[in-house]
Image 1 (cartoon, rainbow, N blue to C red):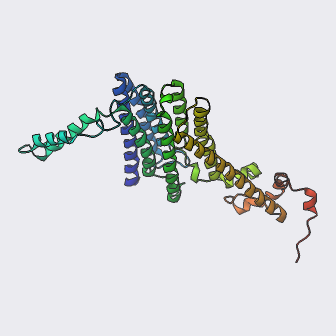
Image 2: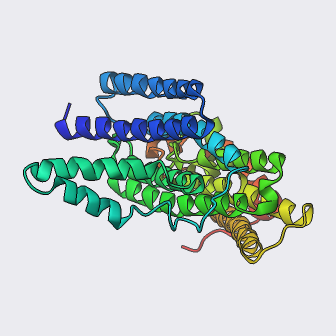
Image 3: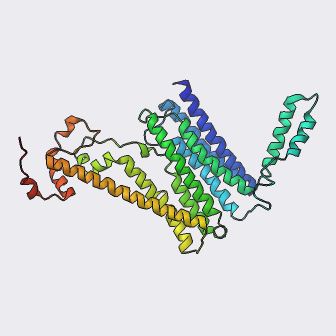
Length: 365
């Protein structure tokens, strides 16, 4: 096992565990009940996954799925749920972040004066660290929750970058995936912070749970790598049917469209529409992002129509030439046996009348 692969696998999972423990600590602090430390036991799943990955995969990842990312979601999401639900009845008493967030210069100066002299630099560093840790406990709860949301999404992207890639995914595909994750994370953070910060939403426990459920559902796209990988075709006869060929050729594009319609922009649009239509909640940003979701969903449907029409045109062209429409990843030898089986299905898919095809003029020599 390569040393860098081992270090990346261990360091990334260690960051996941530490961030999850910080979330559990915040839940225990705001709830003031030690029993919530039991949430830390979820990290045992991540430790088990680490051992199995190091033993059976030599620290490298899988083709389409990242167990480490999925288990990290299991570890941190319950803490964020509890913080958001508790956050519904807690507000900052002062200006946002004005007093609570900034560690005062006076405290640092006092620690510097007390450490100046014979005790040296080491004592000064320790005193400064103590002051900083003490100030962390005074940070407003809303600031803590937002910071955990932000670091959570950043760590998902950075962690996926640091995790060793499997042999089936290239670095070019990984870079494309990370760029997609950055945009996705920004949209998800905006959805959670913008909707949950509405005062009327905070007064409705059902709405908070519904928004958090949609937020959790949108997070499930991060452990999957299908957005940049094509599904390999099987050599069976059923794999050469029209729907299978369409899925094989455009699997990555169809996955991205499905994610947008059913996991991200579609559910986000439904939630925002319910807020405006049923609960009569309106503000400038809510209207803007609702319009943005409508635009994205419309463009994705347009993209789906373009892909389908393009595939139909390709099938029609090959049908006229008497060729077989096969997936590019299928070996050439396997394509020679598919012509007779696909002929009727191609005609039905492209609505090409058999009579006209049989009367097609022969090619000039």
